[in-house]
Image 1 (tube, rainbow, N blue to C red):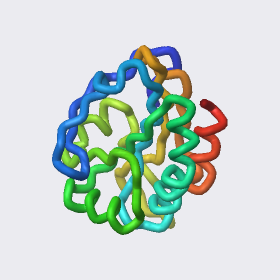
Image 2 (image 1 turned 45 degrees about the vertical axis):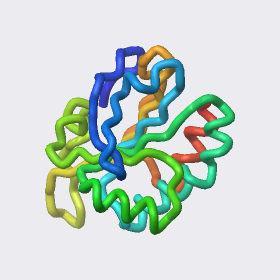
Image 3 (image 1 turned 90 degrees about the vertical axis):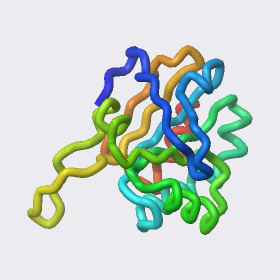
Image 4 (image 1 turned 90 degrees about the horizontal axis):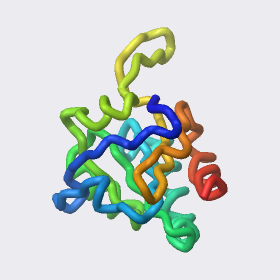
Length: 150
């Protein structure tokens, strides 16, 4: 996990509509940047729908939400449409940003060890500095925790 107080690494990835987004596009706004394992799974859906429900309040506080997973642009589009998600989902199938943000880790599930995204959320301030970092977050609690952090 990246350290609080460090500059958030720049990135450029396509969203659910195929449009490119860079972190620098959000300069002057706070960014809730969350990494999640997979579209349409129960935990990821709970987390995304929680952010969607709180999105008006998050926007009132001058922040945006960006979700990143290794799913395709098409998968993100289906996820967005199925659940009415009002925020940006970025596709990182090559895991470049996922690795730079140090969220690709060894995971244990029922005794089996695999590599995957550890559910992690960063709060980045208006100047691009990481001001909060949470790993192994609980999907259903994370959106409320981040709203409180704002």
